[in-house]
Image (tube, rainbow, N blue to C red; front, side):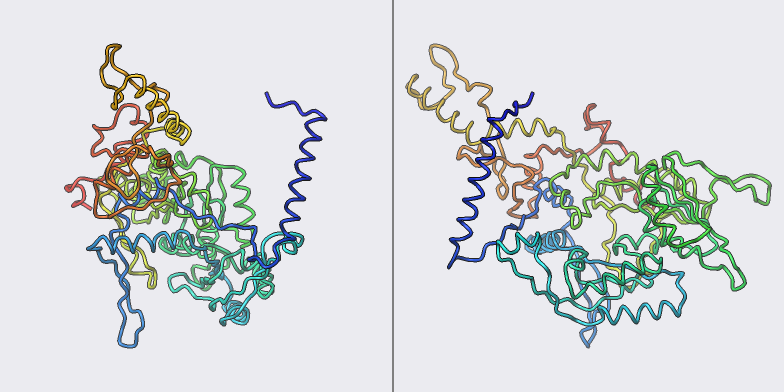
Length: 551
């Protein structure tokens, strides 16, 4: 039960707040000659578990190579394997820099927009952000805070808008959405963007979100199924293509898009997004994608029905979303290796239902916002196993010029968190500086009483042991491959500990790091304990060499 809020407590709290306000005001008045202060401190993102997990998976083992012609223009890209630990460390730093950087704003002009109108929109876009410009960004906070702290606008140079070569009529800026809203010079462009979005001519969408519909590449007469459609940016991109006339004489679209989402509230959001396009060729459903009804086409030559009627199926399944850390900083704090394992069965079930809904000769596109192979390659590998030759992988990267993407992996490590958060917190409490001081005091006291330098030495009274409440865990510090106890009062390894490996080639050292935060590697399903078999499924393990050759 909480503390009783009496008049006396209320008066004391008001007095404390008044004293703090006076101290703050006196401190702000006496800052003459001192450095300019800023109330906003830059938070350094990081997660020891996440960084150690992906380093052990070998995500930094390849680096990007740009091939240029005589004039210095980039002709093509390819990925080469890192041969030294220094190259892996440089790739890891580039990975973190990109992961912690800003997410550039992007948008696209609709595929169904009239060519004359599209040309006019492109001309207006070129007038707004077609050249390099200098902008001022207003500081965060209200006017009172800005005046009291003396905050000044930030000066920034932005590059011209960039046209995405692999996205039809797609554009990307060199600033994020917050910068567009906070810059007075970009205010006309922001207003233009809102007006065109409401009219249905422009869709604000992340660049990576535009890729799955382009990979699927539907045609105007196709029947398309989006199994997890909300909030609707990918669905609208598909609908813009299906909404086009199949032939010059068609007045109405012949194809259709079925947009499904399990959450009814998100389905209503989907309706709001889709109604901008004003197309009759869309059906919105709300059901669990794992049990989406299997529709059959009776129009066959022999009179039998065939399972699946959709030419194209998009499975953009729910995922842990650790690839969205640029727009969702909470990922750094909440990431856990079990998230991918808990979502894996649902992702696989949705993908299997999507494969059943696809007609023979159709295309199925599976996509996530995660980098975890348990949510990506493991699902695709199990799909190929279950299909027994009915499905095959289709290479689409070569048909998307300008898109830089790593090739998929055929093997990965199954590493799962076996220690719960409560157990980790209990270990941290036992190993905090206060408990370390008590442990040291207890050791000195026993040395004096027993006259022995070694605790635990047998005496007449028996064998002395430290109390169970004072026993602390043994930790592996980042950057060292040796086990040592934090007797100096330093904090134990947690998610907030900075990940600093001595060498990315030292797999034993990386393995000790992941084990120090409660993660265990399993080499086969037989090694998984019964308690963990509800999370770690047989489908999580990579294919055998014989299975990989069949693909």
